[in-house]
Image (cartoon, rainbow over all chains, first blue to last red; front, top):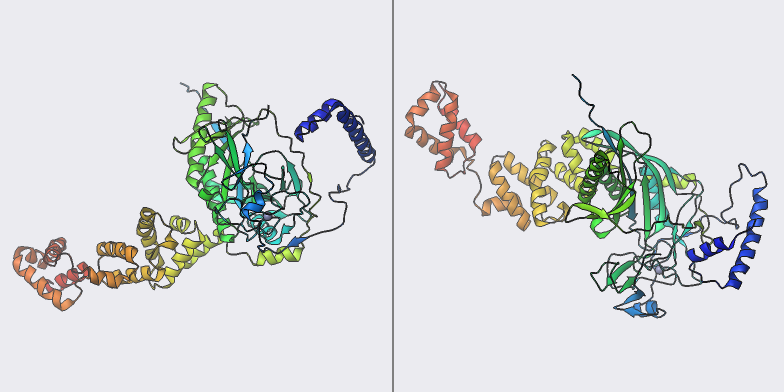
Length: 97
Length: 489
Ligand SMILES: [Zn+2]
C-alpha cells in the first residue's frame, strides 16, 4: 500500500516535523513499507483475535503510592530555554492555522 | 375550534466530569500531589517528560478508579491499558497525555438521580484514568491567551491522577444535570478518593447540550459548555444555554455546533474560538506501560472495603431516624455533614428530626454567613444535642435557644453556659412562678373569671401578662399549666 506525499505532510504537521523534500520521500517509502506489512496481516482471517497492544507479555506493573523527592525548582528549570518567576517561559500560545 | 399544538422541545445533556484523585504521589512518578505551592517544586524527569524517563503506574490510583467505576455500577475491564493522546500544548511537557482510549477501566454503568423530576437513570459510558496537565499563566495584554505576549508554565499539577467520567446523553434538563453532579460529588466524597473541591479544580464539569423538537430522532447540534466552577454554575450555565437554544430553535435560527464559555458574573455563555477541524490525537498504546488485568479477588476486596454510598445512607437515615426525605437529601450531600448529624443525633435521646431541624434551619445559616463548612464550626455535635435538651427541659424557650446557638457558634461554649452568662434561663421554678401567676390573676379579675367559666382562649392573654412581668423569661408551658390549675372551674 502506497502513501502519498500529502499524507506524509499531514502526519508531519501533526508531529510538528519540518521535512526536506528528500526526507519526505524517504518517509513516504518507509511508511509505505510498514503499511504494506500491516496489509499482509489484515489479509488474514483474524476474527476473534484480540489486537496486540503490547508485544511483551508482562502485566500489572505498579508501584505503591509513596512520595519520593522531586527536583528543586532550579534543577527543574535548568534545561528551560527561558524561565521567569520559577516558571517555564513559553512563546505566546496561538491557534493552529 | 382548534388550537395549534404547542411546540414541545426536548433538551439533551451529556456530562464529562474530571475528578483529581487525592493520592499522595502522582500518577506515574513519586512527586507529591498537593494544591498550590511554589511553582515547579514538585516535578521530576518523568512528569517533565525528559528523555529516557519511564513512568510507573500508581497502584492506589488504579484502586480509586475501580472504586469510582463500581460505585457507578460500571463493569471493570478484565484487560485494560494506557494510551498516548498526542497533541501539542505548553501545559503538557511530553506533547502527549497518558490516558485511556479503547479499554477504559470502567464502562457500561448507570447512576440513578432523583429530585423534582421523574427518577432518571443516567448511563455511564466510561470511567477512565489519565494524568492532569500543568497550569499556564498568560502574561501581557488582558491576561487572556488571545492577546498575551507569552505564557508561564508550572508543572506541579502535571501528572496528577485524573479520572474522567463520561455520561450517556440521558440528562433532560439543567435541574437533572445539577442533581447528577451533586450525587456524583457525594459519591466520590464518600469513597474518599478525592477532595472534590470544584473551586480548586479537583472536580471539573463540561457539558454537551442540544435541543430538538419532540419526536425527532436526530439530536440537535451539540454545544459544549465550559468553565462551570461550582454545582450552582452548572445549573445556571445549562439553564441559560437551554433557554438560548430553545429560543433559537423556535425562531428558526438553529443552534450551531460550537464550544461556549460560561461567564460566571453575567450568567451567560458566549462562543469560544476553537479549531475548525476535529482533533487527530493519534491514540496508540503507551509502550512504556504494560497492560493491566485486575484479578477478581482484588476487585472483590476493593468492593468489600467500599464505604456506605449516599444512596444507601439515605435509606438507612430514613429508617433509623425517621427523617423527612427532603432533610435526608440535605444532610447527605456530604459525608461530613451526615456524620456530624449522626453524632449529634446519637447524643440526643428524643426524636432525631429535632436535631436535623436545628442543623438545617439554623446552623447552616450561621455557617453560610461565616463562610465555613459545618465541620469547621466551633459547635461540636454533642453540644447541639445539649442545646436541644435544654429547650426540652424548659430551661430556655425556642426563641432564646436561637440566641444561645449564636453564642455557641461564636465561642464554642456549651449551651447551658451561654444561657447562664446571657441571663437567658427561663423561669422554670414552679414556686417562683406561682407567685407571679397569682399576681396576674389578682390584677386581671375579669379575664380570670372568663377562664374559670371555661373560656380557655383567654388563657393566652394571661400567659402574655406573666411573660411581660417576667421580661419573657418564664417558661410559657409551665405558666399555662399553673394558670389552668389555679383557675380550674
Ligand atoms: Zn514527577
